[in-house]
Length: 361
Ligand code: XIL
Image (cartoon, rainbow, N blue to C red; front, side, top):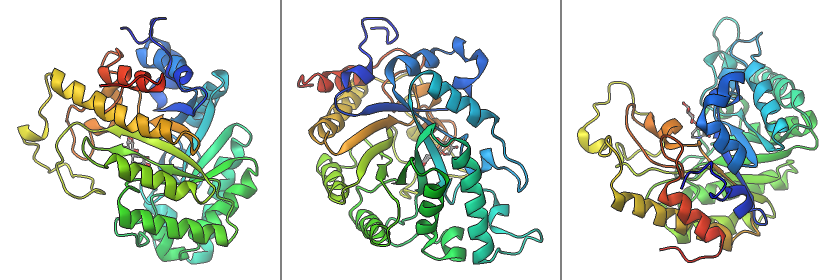
């Protein structure tokens, strides 16, 4: 079945009474010449919400103290408006892809709390303010919790203190009072981290922070997390009265190269053949296993559809997935529903079957 042919159902239609269906997109999808790219047709046909993979991160949109680079972000937002999509902003306050200068004065010395708060406010007003009324939801703070549930010792935390989250949400709300505002993190199915995030969000709510939702990234493995943990995570955060979104869904089929969940494996990492088993294609049995894994995940999402407002995939096809270059460079992964060349995979059929209420095996 060709995914862009009229016979292939559109994912957004299959799930239309349940939740939005999205994809992370990047500059190659939204430039004028992007029409030649088969991924653009997939985005327009299957998805009703988009997230920018990189172009709204601090280093991209605000690379130097006095320069904002709004060109790509403007085109991203125009693309979403033109296609009638629910447009996500990702992300305002994070420890990664944020230049070192953000935390330093003009002499390279660490900023004071007051100066960093001012800089955070200026950035949020410039970026969220510019797209007011068009970007509908923002990942305000990304990844503030460690795996053991403690607060990540990021420069934001070290310089400002743990009210940096409250401030970020307040600034974002002032900049765009109608935008939905989310806390977004990965591996919240890990019980200690989930407990830490729960405590953090409860504290924010008690302080009156204008938080409206929780983004569960959903960078999953074939065997982790167990579906019952995914259900527990949904129930845990839904009980706070917040919108829950799966914001960065993908399922790696490759063996782990490190036990560190949080690791970026450096360029000196030696890639062994066993780390990259499917360079010439994915065997049928592995395709089938991935399809069953996706069927399991979507069965949970459908069962919990009243708690979930959106499911966004982190990428469009296997060709453009970040998992080909993270945590190690130069691998060939197959984490999404569309293959290299844009054809649908068995995992696509599995997700559609679940969406239509058909038991998938
Ligand atoms: C990733 C992008 O996909 C890559 O292109 C980039 O090199 C690194 O960041 N959690 C997030 C995303 O919130 O922003 C990350 O995106 C993936 C993990």
